[in-house]
Amino acid sequence: MAFVTVRQQELEGPPVSLAERAYTAIQDQLIMLDIPPMAPIDDSALSASLGLGRTPVREALKRLEVDRLVVSYPRRGTFATGVDITDLAYISEIRVQLEPLAARRAAETAGPGVKSELAELADEVADLDVRSLERTELMRCDLRVHRAIYRAAGNPHLEDTLVRYDNLATRIFCLFLDRMPHFDRHVGEHTALLRAIADGDADTAAELALVHVTGFEKAIRAII
Image (cartoon, rainbow, N blue to C red; front, side, top):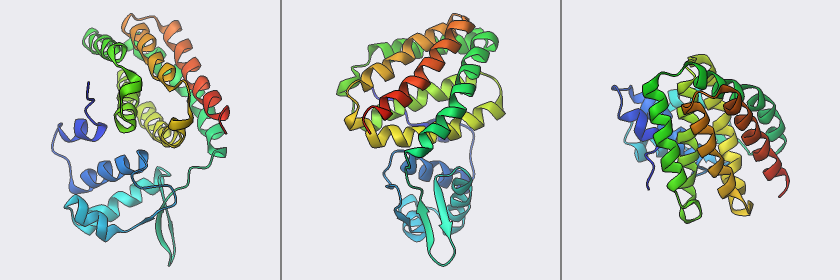
């Protein structure tokens, strides 16, 4: 089953600015490592490939620098940030606090319609043959689940923060995916988590979210 990209989902909503289109498109390339870590970023080439002007691309790159996905150096240019494994501990330190909070809030406050959508998403994930998916499709599945939970939590500030750190975690996931022997278990954990939220079981949802985040960090550390 093909998952709609996070970028496509956003572009199918209300009309967005050219800068927003550039931001979401470039962000996707950075998260999926289509723009490799430490690679120089040519705003002219990006403008041409995206069919957008250089001004919205430059505005997007400024936002992505705040997101720690790119870094700019005077007289040297703009580069994709490196994937430093020492960042894993910092990212996990934040996620172990906020992911359970988002899961708990979603279970407690999401409306029936949202919970029904999460239950349907859980069924979709359960039916996936994870090991047959290409890397990009697998990552989009992971992103879609996390984004759905963050949105269901109903706190836009919490959602924005978690999206930023999940993006950074996803880059690490992409980098080490081929060396993770049990990545299918990690993706499969989403099913129980989504169903706990859909059932309104806040305690279980929070616990599963914590196990999911800590398990990811342990899996990465086991192969480095």
